[in-house]
Image (cartoon, rainbow over all chains, first blue to last red; front, side, top):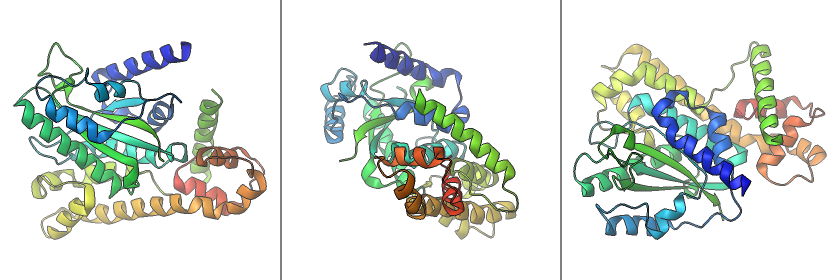
Length: 189
Length: 141
């Protein structure tokens, strides 16, 4: 129980982190120590079901859905990766963050694990468009990691959450809601 | 707890080795490599490669295609960034091969890549220069 409470407060700390810490200050050991913690009882997540659930619930939110709900129980961190407006192109100023993730995923401590990249948008624009764009943006990060940085593609999964899971539900249009979650999905089988 | 101590000790060692390794070009992290790319080529990327992505060599292809218009510092940086990324990848792929002898000698009963690496880094008796250098080049200190 103590371990669990610690993990929850740590997750909350990381959830708040993007508001005060810029992505440039994120460092490798921070990523390693957060993502390296895996609970033996961590739930298995089927990425295809996440996509299905999100598409069937556009505009209704995903946090309470059965498969999306499991994600909260997994080791994760939130990073800021900026894209060109209405495009899947990663802004050059965010290349470093993608590189930091690549450095961490290439460390032997994380070799055995697979990871899910979740793209989130703010509520500006239609919910359907936001869902599609965030899926494509998550896919673009996946592609950069698996090609430019040669992370094995069988370790990487990506999904868009659109505006369906705001970090700041009171202000759905806030830029803070645009973010990328990197989640440890557990052992590569 | 033990792990965290191991990591900070590793970092200290890496700093020491970085400071003392003279006359040899060390590899750099993926993060540092693409930070240089963004710094030297960011404005050219925004100007000539709008909407194109880092993945699948598209930014590289775009900058090369527009070589006549791209700034000279970007062109020279692009080559060295791509070389550093390739060197780091090569180093990471080679560690467990280069260190095979030391692994069987000192870390034989250790299971798991992360634990084997910690064993190699922590075992003072690993005096194999190639193995030590391979770990440093892989960025795993």
